[in-house]
Length: 107
Length: 122
Image (cartoon, rainbow over all chains, first blue to last red; front, side):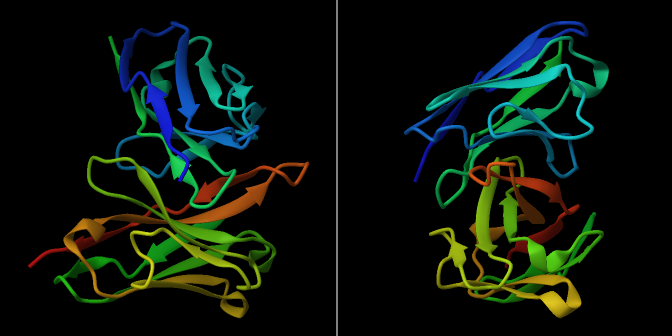
């Protein structure tokens, strides 16, 4: 199985901050990497697919980059509604696996 | 798009449950579907997936031989039969719709249900 390691596991930030979250995979997955946002008690929501494609309706302050084994989710100016947990997921091979999550908390 | 799960609840170890997911707002038989679970306070775990025509079915090792995924395209419904349940199966189970990017090379989960809680406890 492909292992995904997110870093950091949690971070504290303020409104307006630029936030970057890393996701590293145990083997190359080309660009088959997706990012999801999850708020407490809610289902995950797709933000970014295929490493860098913004899902319809997602604000442009979210962006994704990377290929191979190293990927990044960037939030350019953190908004109050962005405090949540972010998960990366690989769809390159079965079983599709997720990172452990990164919790973005209010500083 | 709406995905509405049902069938969760509390069950004793070695018991069984059948989850259902009612889909609407899209052409159900055009898409693969999946079940993804999340244990309390933990991360996301893919459980099982099924292609649009049920030809290809996959399971996580942790549920292989105990869980069975199926779908009824006439009823726009997805199911998960869970047998021999264990305490470690306790989780919120999400019904998830599959999709592909324009190249057809990269899959992703574009819609999730609200989840149904399964608790395995004696």
